[in-house]
Every structure is written in structure tokens, then in C-alpha cells.
Length: 216
Image 1 (cartoon, one colour):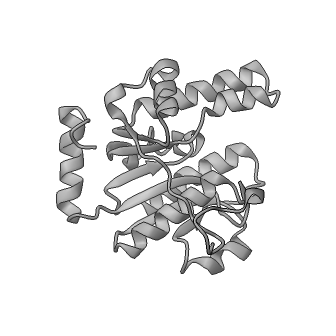
Image 2 (tube, rainbow, N blue to C red):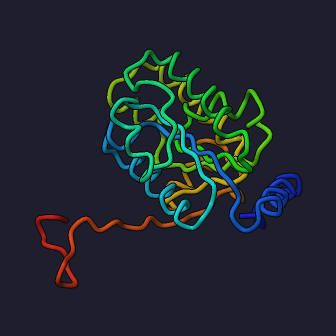
């Protein structure tokens, strides 16, 4: 990651690593808690934060959700619920920003898992000065277009994506196809793209070396 950054970004990353040892503290900007919606992005964020915590790294994650039911799982998932996932979008964006600043004040790295969640924190306030890692799991604007969103909505989403991805020190993708998409469609510097194939969390212990065909 450090080798792929430009000299300024490389220096920021080195400072972060040196100040926190081998495990820098990070604040993750996600979408929702896994209890709110059991999607791939939310599960990815949850498991990543869980793994970092097991390794001893200081980690926080800011998401939306139900404070009443989600806060009880603090031991297993280090999140800070900013507001309800059903709140008006402007309020969600604002609360994500203020909560990220509050819980990330000791962080060395910002890790963004959804472009809209990272838009304000990476542009306004103290977190904008920190190295930014982005986990890209698909083109938000294009996916919205496929489900019938207006061209205005898709244009705004694309600009938000471009702005956040363009500020990234490093962007993590799960495949070469996503890496190529970032470079060709979003104008991202190819040297910031890092391809890390996804792992699999086994929910069912299998007794054979092949999963039942019904699960594939």
C-alpha cells in the first residue's frame, strides 16, 4: 500500500504507522449495522472490524441503525450508531459526519466503505487530513440507474463517488474488474488500486470438500 502512494501520501501513511506501531487506529465509515440489513457491505465491515479488534488494533465504525437493539452487540461489533437508518437522508449525512469526528478523533486512518458515508468526513473537518482507505464494492450510481433512479440522482451520486475516490490514498477492490472500472470510469490513479480477493465466512461446517449444490 505504501509503495503505491505518492510521496506525500507515503509520508502520511508512514507517520500513522510509526505513531501507532504496527497496528494504526482506524475509524470506518459504513452504511448500516448487520442487524439493520444483512447485506454484503455490512457483513464485510463487521467482520473486518472484528478481525482488527482481535489483532489488537484500535478500531471504530460509524453506521446507521437502531440504537435500541444494536447497541447491545457492542462487544462483538465495534460500531457507533449515528442515527436511525430510516432518518431523512440529509440528517443521516450530517449525523454520520459529526459522529465520525467524535469517535475518530484519536484515529490515524479513515476507512470508507460507502461513498456517501465518507463524503463530509473526508472533505470537512479534522478527518480530511488523515490517510484515506476506500473499500470499493460496486458502482453506486450505476446500480441506482439499473433500479430506475433519475438521471439527476445518478449524476449526483457519481460526483460524490468521484470526489471520495479521488481523495483516497489506497482503494481496496475485490477483483480486477472493479479495479479497471475505477480507473476507466472514475479516473482513479491505478497505483492507488489494490486488489484483495475476498475471503469466505463459513456459516455451516461441511464434512466434505465440496459444498452441497443447493448452496452454490
